[in-house]
Length: 248
Ligand SMILES: O=C(CO)COP(=O)(O)O
Image (cartoon, rainbow, N blue to C red):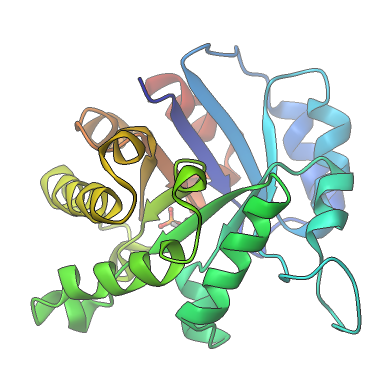
């Protein structure tokens, strides 16, 4: 039985002061059956840790450089994240792929490095609007999933969380339908099965992301192959994010 996961990705939003105000308002009743994780700007992680340290809420980062230390100006290492209390890291968000030019090969190194340091990678995959309209979704997803998972030992693949985030649905207010998201989640599970076997594919958690809110979360978590959501904009509003978590 896979445990559901609701992860809030703040992206490049909220100063330390704003994050403090947010967590003062974030009062949630924990659920045994759903993990809740905040994926924050690096600067907000210590303040979040202060507020949630006595709860079961998890912490994660939006990026990580795949090396422990060294001459990588501006980057943050897995050791630094672990020391901050992070147990999750997003690898290959489409905004980093598209705006910062991250390649499948570089993202694969991050996923492997995170696993090597017992940090759960949340691997993001998803197609552009043009690819979607041209019927190239399956091809794109297969390429991205294979590139990230094929170099990982089979027994570690189940520790990866895979988030299907169609680029056209992110921040648009127009989420994919639950049927569309489920079809791709099912495809991802099949690809994982082909790479790592049925047992692993039954264990791996697959999220949907793209304009998730308190009104549509149920549609997604009601699907067989969708185990939760990666939430952007709606995670910036404490009441709405709490509601998403409670309805998931
Ligand atoms: O990119 C996302 C989460 O990583 C989704 O963002 P929105 O929920 O704002 O569409």
